[in-house]
Structures are given as C-alpha cells and as structure tokens.
Image 1: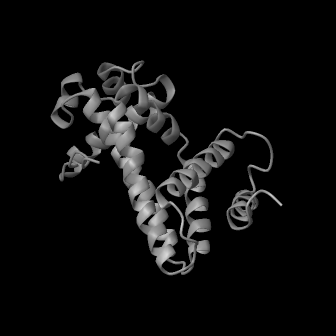
Image 2: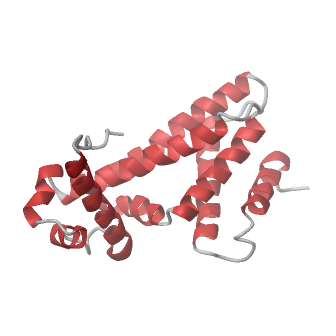
Length: 199
C-alpha cells in the first residue's frame, strides 16, 4: 500500500491540513465519497476552496490518504497491544479486542474502508491483501513454533480477518445483544477458534 501524503511541518499549515482531513472523514462517513465534493470539504473545514489543493492534488488523493491513515492506525494499535503478549492465543485475542475497540471509537472507518471497493477496486484489494500478508507471517511463525497446527495460513488469515470484521460490525452497529461486553464477545470468538464448532 502506498504511503500517506506527507503532513506539513509548520503549526498553521498542520492545523489547516487536519481541518481538511477531519472534515473529509466526517463528510465521507455521512454522505459517502461520491456524495461529497471538494467544495463541501473546504466549506465544512472553514478554509478557502483553493487552499485544498495546497495539500491534496484531488479528492481521490485525499480519500486514499484517509484510507491509508486508517490502515496504519489499525496496524499500529493492534501491534502495540499484541506486542505485550507472548502466546499465539493471547496475541489473537488481544488483536481482535484491539480492533473492535478501535472500530467502536472510530465507526467511520468501516464506511470509508469498505466504500473503497466501489471507488478503486485495486485499492480495496491492496488494503486487505497487505493486512493478510502481515497476518500470514505471524501465523507461519506460530506454525513453526508449534503453537498452531500446520494449515493453509493464507486461507486462515482471511477467515480470521472476516471474523474480526463482522464481529466489529456487530458491536459498532449494535446488532443483536451483549455489544457493550466486548470481552464476552471476544471470548466467544476465541472459544470457537480454540475448540472448533462441531462436537
């Protein structure tokens, strides 16, 4: 995945950059990418229309920056939590919990990430493939350490990402029950992962 647009270094420029970014995130979440114009963003950010192009070459470039920033933030948050754990079981549990709590705090991530499928399919694919590659590396290490059985780690990475994605949706959209008890939900996921489904 490409790198984000570099943030400006001066205080005033950084503040303007962040105003534009915050406005874009709010409007992309509320109205979608195609329902949001550069004029909408600059008006909401309280900056002149021409100011936008000092920082971002286009609305698409801004959207990609937002998506990449979310990706980096998710990875950083999960990595920070997982690094404190030693076993694969603990790392898996902590990673799922960290993602759910982050999604609960920033529900706009779901809309913006998933909308990328309809904006730039390659961007969507790159987003999830890059996540999967990192997951696969960790799973392969766990196979090598005999913490998990020898299994197709690529397929498993997508299974685990799928579980985490939809459990996150359950909590963020308040689907069903027990959504305030994240530990309970994560424990149910881990019970399935550890013991399987069938008797």
